[in-house]
Image 1 (spheres, rainbow, N blue to C red):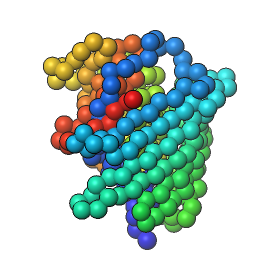
Image 2 (tube, rainbow, N blue to C red; image 1 turned 120 degrees about the vertical axis):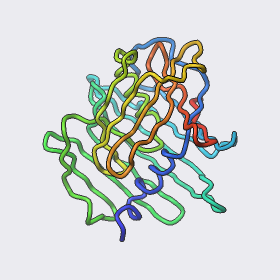
Image 3 (spheres, rainbow, N blue to C red; image 1 turned 90 degrees about the vertical axis):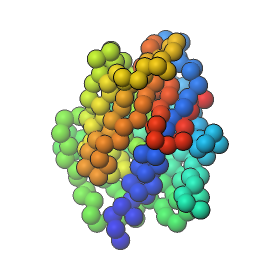
Image 4 (tube, one colour; image 1 turned 90 degrees about the horizontal axis):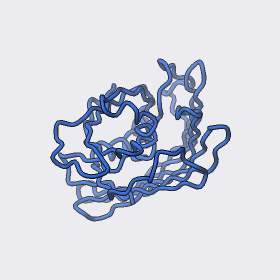
Length: 245
């Protein structure tokens, strides 16, 4: 079976992320204090103003800075004349600096199901797939310490822009590991030349995901001026929205 047909997270979730743009309410956290256990957030996905589903995440525990999160994605995406169902649930664990320690997730579409476990270590990223995917190595080497990227999981991106809030004015490049394509990519954030939409509480940035298998995916991010969190994400080429409730 073709690797990317078997790996739902690549052909479905990544495809949805590339296509979907984001809109969020202009609600930001009151300050930039560290997030505490019990914090929860939700993003609503819209096409032409109509909801197609949500992504939610809850910070379950914090232990010496180590964060354990649970997340859920539930989308019903129009594809030509069909509707593609994508349900994904799981847990990810981050260290005190926001870098990933593990991911345990299951994704289900209309026709397929895939379980994935990733463990981030000093020698690379170990993988467990159910059903197994022969083309995927048991240990994937990476350069440096990449952040984690999961398509449609906007919370992960928002945690990273929060963590790099101090660099916001000049922009920055973050190494990431795609849990969908199972390879290293990069995320570049820089002030947008399109500031006509800038308003109170946020500034506009261009965010580019780059890497083998995904090319360059450019979206517009509205980042909070108090926390750095994502409060709006826009793909100008699509009439699609993702909104933080």
